[in-house]
Length: 390
Image: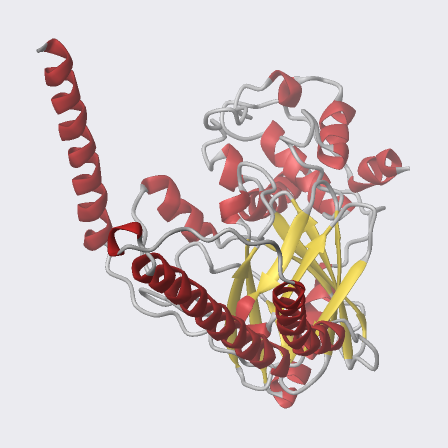
């Protein structure tokens, strides 16, 4: 009796969990996201490249062939079972193999596989043809963000980091999702011109990531120490979303990809604007800063890159260590904290931030040493960070 009551309690508990999950899902109403996932989506994202269109065609071709084979094989099997059942008076026959049958059921699947492989191979080869690209972008996977470097074509020399928009992370922390692009919006999307062939070179700084945008028909692993590439040519202006598709750690779900496809004219204007911004941000590492000025600069760097994990209050969360009152931050040896930001620690739990400039690293360290309850009065100059890199 006790066993039955325990089972009944377990069933009621599970029913409560499922009911709660259903109520939670219905409380947050979403709509289709153009360039991203759709509500009750049963198919691939709408294609905006020729390769993606070919992938859609292959998907349906394979599905139809497999369905026809499934129906035919099981129809024959069930018909044979029913028609020749023992209760109808049929007796099992004893016979040896038939060479004709053996040849037929070997040749038929072989031909089917060949017919399926030919168009698939054609699309695969085309997806790897990265020659004659108008624009080349190196994509570097970090835990947990993307780095974009424009290395050839219009925009050459531009480089920036793309992370989950801070408002999205705040909604996640609060458990209050909003918007159709929840956990897909980033602060700095990858911007490319429409109608131009874009070569994407992938690599990674720490662990294996995967750069994937379904509407563009691309998915390429980003592996530390290796350089791999793919390409796309978007035929429609718009914003297209993807995500890292290789389990890369605890923040894997917070590593979205946002590609903004604009007109050729708008792309040129964007490039000019970004070059002016980067020129304005270019800091002389030999410049000597005052504590207050560098701390103000560091506050912005912290909000954009560090607050997602360490929180705006510096208190940390869960396994993330607090910076407020941290022995490392309060240590008189400033170079210890510099080394952590440059090299990371705890096997990548704290990732390296070498992609930040010397001034940005010096600024954020100065900010943490002089904010919250940390009132050390210590100052890290960019020149000290530059020296530590060597």
